[in-house]
Image (cartoon, rainbow, N blue to C red; front, top):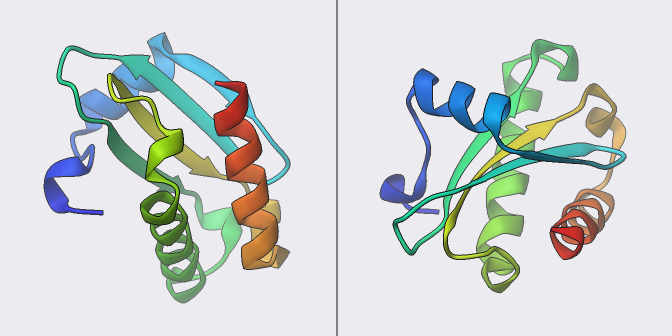
Length: 107
């Protein structure tokens, strides 16, 4: 995932979370909101309940890898915020991948 594909601003995060569509799974919650620009943008949010900084960064790397490998499942005219639940700390990579793919197919 490139830097220009990321949602960074706090205001943008709040706008997508408060006014967007919500889908929840076992390990992941996805918020999405339509936009005009034709490429999808992504934000990843992981709370401190997931673990220390090492664990949170590991989860972020896994989520970014899943996003990069499944780029075609994301709609082009949307912004996405992917929130990782505390239960994801004990999940394997395959479980995270399957949960995210199932949520994207619902979208």
